[in-house]
Amino acid sequence: MRYYIRQLFKTPMLLIFALMTLIFGFTALGMRAEVNEYAVVTALGVDMADDGYELSFLTFIPIAQQTFTEQYKVVTAKGKSMAEAIDFAGLRMGRQVGLSHIKVIVLNSELLNDDLSTHIDFLLRNKQISTSAKLVCCDSTAKEFLISAQKLDNASSVKISDLVSFNLDHIFAADSSLETYAKGTFGPTGVGLISLLHLEKSDGEGLAATMSDSQSQSSGQSSGGQETKEIINSGDTAILKDGKLVTTLNADQMRDCNFLHGVCTICSLEIDHFSDKDFTDATLSFEIFDKTISYKVVFENGTPIVCVNTKLSLKLGEVKNSDGQITKNVELFVISKSAEKAIEQKVKKYMADGLEIMRDNNTDIVDFYTIIHNTNPKAFKNFLNSLENSDEYLSHIVVKASVDVMAK
Image 1: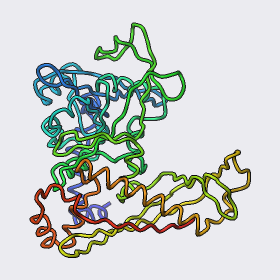
Image 2: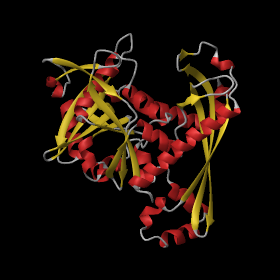
Image 3: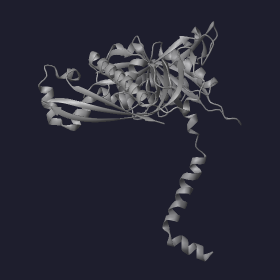
């Protein structure tokens, strides 16, 4: 025993550890659980009100039982400012509103009619909210949208946060978070992207939630006539410049722009009316597993030329003739040189269309500004000064595209 006491005095850190355990350990055992003090908010909805904002909170309610189940409810509160609405929501729930677990922020489309940055300034500055929280815009009220999300989260294994996060990799959509929005809007291009989700009446098939008009109550419970609505993620994207809505792009238009952008990687690609030694007037469907883009910038006579090299890793997934589907195992087919050439031409067509979309709307979605500036700041500054309107630089730069196809 004396040996252990001597060793204890030789290592004073053990004494400190024991003292901290006595002071804080037993005290912590008697404290209330934080779930009883804080309301865990997983999604936040923002609507305009007559004299300010109406905020809707999708809150998680922990229930002590043998089998763990997640239950959610929607609580709404109005205030002249978002901070005031959060305080009122805390009074309704009898708990402090915790914002650190927010994964999705749902914005009513009415907010896009003005400068969005002024409306969400509180959210951008709030240190509790993670910058990775996804921004979503909906054509219904944010409260109605979250009521649908609540029912899906309660009744389905598919979470609304998973639905939004899927856009990060999918080439037909856009990644939109607080961080990416702030970087784009307050960066040199001023361009921000926000995914658009729709709430539509359901035909009874697929992922849907049953709702009623009486669900505007804070509890989210229904008592009137019910109708089934479903959340649709079709890849539509709102394009904003300096916080104001410029245009809305559908999934195909976003695909065209994303073939110039190195963020989204997963999609499919179809080649129509293809013929070679193996196929006659066939439609080839390829699955793209990876997309890598590199940029090279050179200046000729003061004009920046951006060389975009796209490397695609894909495989043939399906083949259809004009008279029906080919029954052979397409995985055994080797992509021929003529097929590679057809893929290159199709991708270059997409890239050209995407560049035209950006030029028509004067929105630098790809951020060519930063790519060119980082290559040669002085030459780029001289180029901008030579333009009558430096904000329209997209119409004056030259973009050259090349495509490398790698069969998997």
